Image (cartoon, rainbow over all chains, first blue to last red; front, side, top):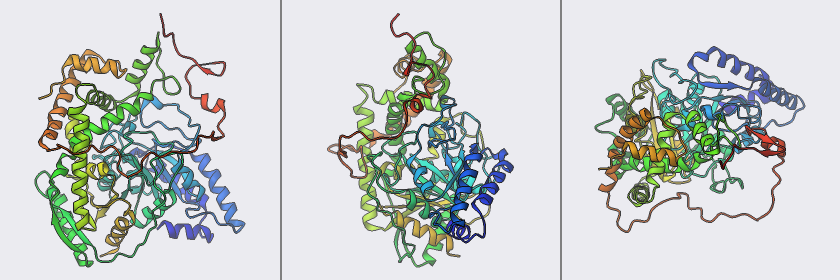
Length: 462
Length: 97
């Protein structure tokens, strides 16, 4: 889709300006879904004109020349606000830009706006946004998923052909599943996180949300590769090959039983039949320790969150509150600027890191993380990829889980394991009536191309 | 079974530089206790002699040359977001009474 669009722009069939104007018009028509927090109209039109000029002169406008896109509002961009959906960063004007956005723009993509999220990417429904929730494009009474709910909704509403999300424990895949789009969480270290609001540094990744897996591969290809400014980035290993040979696929049977809605199970069973029809060999496999992933996650991630969010003190930037002394400035600014879920995670994090509790919680969780990774490795020795649902339910109702943080966390139970192991995983829509359900495909480290190629074949297969 | 008491929450809030009200501390104490009850399941997993994992993609000790990199951002650009400034410096409220 995007490849065709780029070809049409290059051939002069449509201009970048027309596309940007269409995107902005759609964003305005769909304002009531609250997918976006801001639009950068003037900046986008200026860039579109520059690209149209280039094409008129017969120059190459890049792999994404003239294609509009949306970034999650925890990514820094020139000339656009960055709030992370929290009052704390209201008014922040980024002095530098995220490397991922920089690379996309170098290839001609055009940022048109910033998408809603759970504040600081903490949440699974986009209801933790300080500026109000995003609504599911398929049913306005339901959540779009989260934390990249605005990005997923924006793509589902066709506001732009692609959006960027961040995924720490499922924040790209789960909203993709709930909103009926493709969401790719690449191998940890594939895309530079320079210029992105840090959440949990040992699992945070950036990835594309698109209509097709092929589009996701194109966007990922442009963004991926080593960056001196993020020392966790891997040398560029990603090259997309869309040809899929018959694969050995393991269906994670621990995710097909109790606690998973029948509607989700049925959809995944249908997907299994479709994959068999395409010539793949599918066998059930049990990974009994994955069920502890959520407990590991809610120790490790709050610990990293508490550390990463210590910088928000209202001194160098941020929405500072009136105070009589320095300590009061910190405490009042943080209390007013963070959402309740941010505060909860900071408190949990500082608790598990306190002396006396460190071994019992943080170290124990890091050890169970090893046990899970070993289990993944054994399974991925036997199988090329693993599949299962993305979430135990379809998109839930707005307000349904807000009163019970633990219940909200359980929506992440099938996405956190791949995050803790750093593995590439995609959510690809399964064709069905009613609310969307995604199929999750998980591969070994650096097999992002295999994961996306299988997803692409799955989408094309009838 | 870990219970996160009202006093624990107040102490944690001080350590985390967060102002919270007594009502909030009460609610958070219940929420955190429930979350830690769930986390207790980690003790079911045998981890004797298992190394902890903190990094997952195999990179180790990534270094670069100790050289100044020009990011081409001016001092004024970097200071523009600071809520209080004085003569090119960031200003903070009184530290010592």
